[in-house]
Amino acid sequence: MADTSRDRQSRRQLTRPRFLVQLIRLAALVGALVAAVPSCGLIFPHNHPAPKSSSDQPSSVLVDVQSHNWSDITVYLITGGLPQRLGMVTALGAASFDFPSQRLNNSAGIRLRALPVAGQPFTSENILVLPGQVITWTLENNLDRSSFSVY
Image (tube, rainbow, N blue to C red; front, side, top):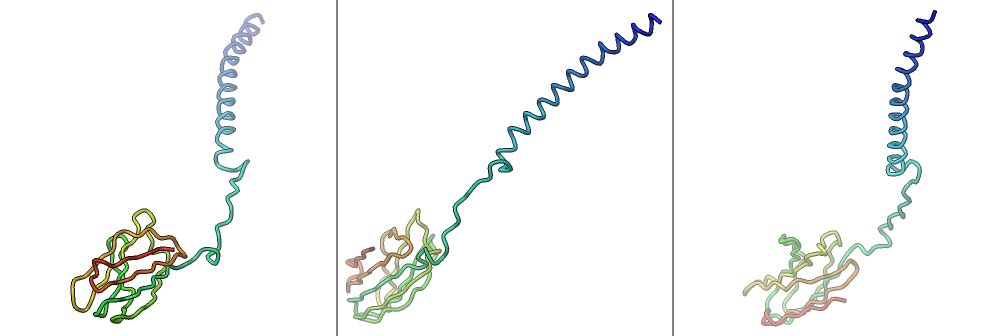
């Protein structure tokens, strides 16, 4: 009978370290879960403000062109190096064009290009414009003297 009580004590001593190892593993698992759950938003959901509706944000940019040139001129919008035809201004005339604000590249700005029927094309310098603003472009007979304003 003494042998069986010794066997039981040795078994208990062997199971105690196993029990401690399992308890440490369980504590590490619970700690990892407690650390990970808030980051995935289960306990504290992220409250993001609702995006503004499209009616709150201006959806286009207006380009008013006043031509003092003797030729008809085709006006192009250049964003990211790609031209998009806006329309044509008659000689000594005026016209208004608009383009969607999605065409804006806020970091680089836009350029306007005037392509007269007779003569050399002219490209403006970079124009930084935001949705809802108006670009007024005055084209002179000598296109190099043309000017613009943004408001």
